[in-house]
Length: 193
Image (cartoon, rainbow, N blue to C red; front, side, top):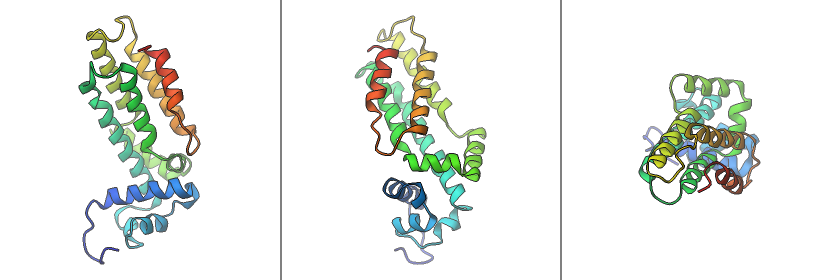
């Protein structure tokens, strides 16, 4: 455990990673501030020193992971002409699915204060599904220009269907559920390549 009064490097990420491990292992009921700090090997009160409480912490975790997923989606532009269009899109969708354990998503949706804080974060400009959708649309349009996606394909609709399905699966999947096959089938229908 870190000595009292000594700054902990990357504390925010350390707590987030600990929360994800606790949620994966113990489910939503096990995700308490004490369990998180114990998993992070930090003092019990450190979470409340840096966050207004568990609700704000959960919301900030969700916002952080969405921002990470949006950055990964934005990196799609560097993959134009590489692998297959479906593989590149599936990588983004699966990374979003893997970015949040179902227990954390459940807490963010069912705890009113966490849901409100998350919604406020999105309303103030934090990246969300729309940022991922825009990045996917831009990628698909670039693949159209490169001739790897039919010119008559509706890039906006494909991106919306992909992100909408990912959103649905993220919010409704069971812990440990493999969504890879579902995404493969969806992408085969949407892009056929």
